[in-house]
Image (cartoon, rainbow, N blue to C red; front, side, top):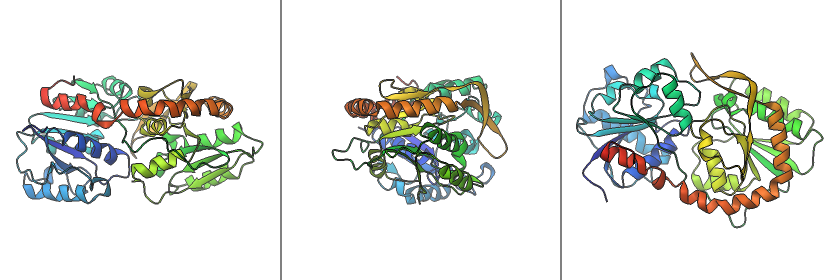
Length: 385
């Protein structure tokens, strides 16, 4: 039942990243407890010195948010208009530089949710995070990065979750070849997601062109040089690589569940994740994972289901965060990826059986309503109990 507390949720409704998906689920859960209003932080004209404190600006932002396909099923409790924000508690799920302080200054109590993918955050992110009542992040990896970079405000870990659509299908349509799925949602994320590194490792794991194994790469390729590099790896001798270029990133959960159920294992050689939703979604869909778990995905690492790729023993690297600056992360271990892929191939039947058996408990423990209980408590009491 909703109480009289008013909550203002800032989010990137129009982004091509996973942020809108997370913000949508936050909105749906919070709307079951509070009077919720939403604001789009990715309007190109919305800068602090140009945002008048009027309802008209809010309505424009709200309209943009509601127009996005991901938000068409928001609950009716999400309010359309909110002219005064002083007595409204603010929260969010964005990168810190998405959240311009000119907006948050309108609120007396602010609990923004932030995310990062590297082991440290940018200086302007640290400055922004230290302006708020308290902050929350989806993993201990993010919490360590924020604290290591100088954030001194109260900082809480509140996990992400999964939609109920992610589940094993009774009669999944899988290719006759054992198929590894490598996902990349945005072309310029390919270095952080380990796309080219993963393709090289797959070719080296199965160099003789095994007839019963393949890799499915699902990624945009419009980043400069990426298409040519992918085509070069595809042409190398070895097991086949199939490339799909999705027309849209915002894929409904039911369709994503079908994608997971249509392969045999997820291959996630990422250098850094704030939480790692695809690895959790895949396990909820009943397929095992081979990937890196030294970042945010550690929160849901399951050794009986997952094959862990360790980091390169001697190297760190820079992963792009913006065009101007980078963050430090652990680098990938090529030999470790090759060995893990071969091991998953050899052990797939047993790991698949365990993954299907574990899926109901994963769906039960990681549903959005359950994992966001601490956020509801934070807004209601000031503590994420």
